[in-house]
Image: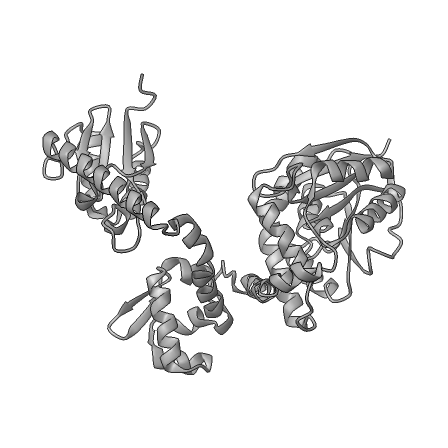
Length: 450
């Protein structure tokens, strides 16, 4: 049985640099072109596109197979896609110049490839070589640091519509020789292109890393650069059990942090609102509301609701900017304070802690939950959104790694498990505590007041 008229497999198996592979010959671009072309011709509901692993024909890549006929194509390029979709998928006639129908040769090549691969793996194992997976994890900081440095120097903005290393070095006040080395690495990472001595932004870097772009993420990503410096203290933090001070947070650090939180929260806020529902919601307290993304989303979903953001004095003016830009200033008020000490007030239908609990210790979270219980109206809800660890705290991977992020960044923070949050809420007097799974890395834990 074939649920689709055609099923296309395109090899996208990554290989070490310098080893022949379909991706090295452009298979990812072929796959993207197939997706665009099938949609443009109205065939996307009749054609299933699937990436696949190595077919053992790496020297002839990019390789793709069209089923149910089992037509093999080799050395396919993006420029060939329109013809394949139009002639084969639409008219039912394979593109003969690209078809590979020498079955004995194909089988022999594939078998030889498999034997060479297994022999190479056996030799590596015998020699005690470090597996690629471990080597890649250990060296993973290199491309990351390259991009973060480029963002700190604002390299992508300096590249503009095209410039050479000397011009770019002058614009970012850095050494031209060193800038040239960084630019070449960015070309290797696919973030810049180079023609002669001139460099240009690629579409992704132009969209996300250049000042003035509608989707510029640079300011938020500078917070990741700040985190990188904290992570360099991880060894000492593990020895001491808490973060190692590396200087006071500056106003620029705070602005970058809030920009990063806005980047994440803007996408997740509608998911949270949908999961919670808005029936009977009139007053909301957003503890540590940051950029205000969640209050803004609730205000837009509940035109009669009033939201209050409680955050530290340094954050409140930044949140006010986002609230004003969203046009909900009449519904969202801001209060400067300390959630660990200040009175919350009373009569709230929802109290939110979005990406907050991981900053605090168990004792601090227990106290916040207790005071939140007192501040909620009947049938009110305490909503925690955070990374939720498995019972043994070894996963999910992002939550476990983020717990280390809290070790290097806070005094007592960590990621916590569902059972911990449930126990703390029940001890504070909440009932019906439940978990609501969301798409992405974080979920909700919700407790209700009777």
